[in-house]
Image (cartoon, rainbow, N blue to C red; front, side, top):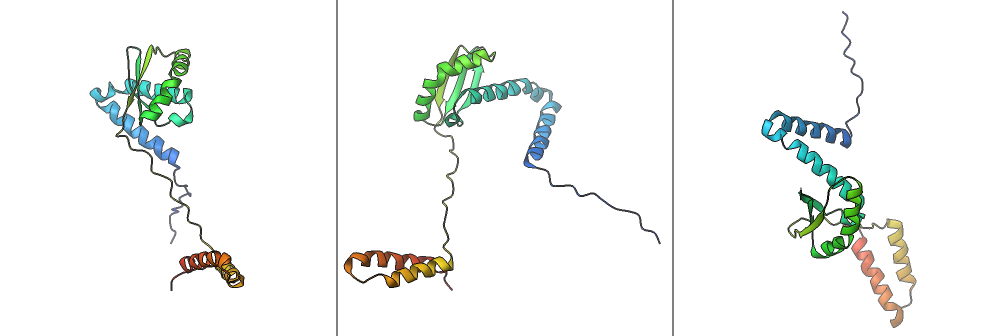
Length: 169
C-alpha cells in the first residue's frame, strides 16, 4: 500500500514586523471597506507622516510628545508634563523651520500639556544573585575578620547579607 506524501516544509514563525504588517493591513482593509471610514484614511496617513517628520526634527527626549491636530497651518502638540512642554517650547522655532523645509505649511505651533497620559512603566530592578562559592567566600572573610569594634560593623553587615542570600530549605 502506498501512502500519499504529506510533506510540509518548515516555516519559521512570523517576526513581529511581519505580524505588525499583517495586522496593519487588516486594519486598513477594514477602514477601506466602509465608505465613512475610508474618508479618514488620507487624514490618518497625513498625520502619521507629519508625526514622523516631527519626530525626526526633535531630539529623542521628546518621543512622548505627539501631534494632536493640524489645521490651517496651526500644529497642536501634546506634552506629558509642563517641564517637557517648556523644553519643547525652546525647540519650536527650529522645528517649524525644519517642517517648512520638508514642505509642511506650519505657521505656528501650540503645545498642550496632557497630564493624564500614562508614562511608560519603569524598568524592572536588576537583582544580582550570588553563587554558593561567593557566599562561602564572604563567610570565610567574616570569620577571618578580627572582633575589635572597628571591624565589627563590617562583620555584622557581611553576616546579614549571607543570611539574606542563603537559599531557604
